[in-house]
Length: 88
Image (cartoon, rainbow, N blue to C red):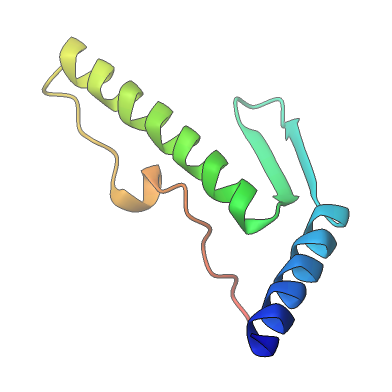
């Protein structure tokens, strides 16, 4: 029980820190692209990822219905998962 309580307290502190440090920014670059940057608690980010993924899938289905011969973007082009930064 003590270990479980300690783990629960650690997770709560971790979440509270993530909430304090959360931010989400975006800007339009003037060339048709919007750049996103931010940090969210993982539990909140997962909900956002699901929402964006659902929207992207709906858009894909709509495009395929209009023009089934239109090439489908590659997995990396449509991925909503973050890419690993290049670390030397």
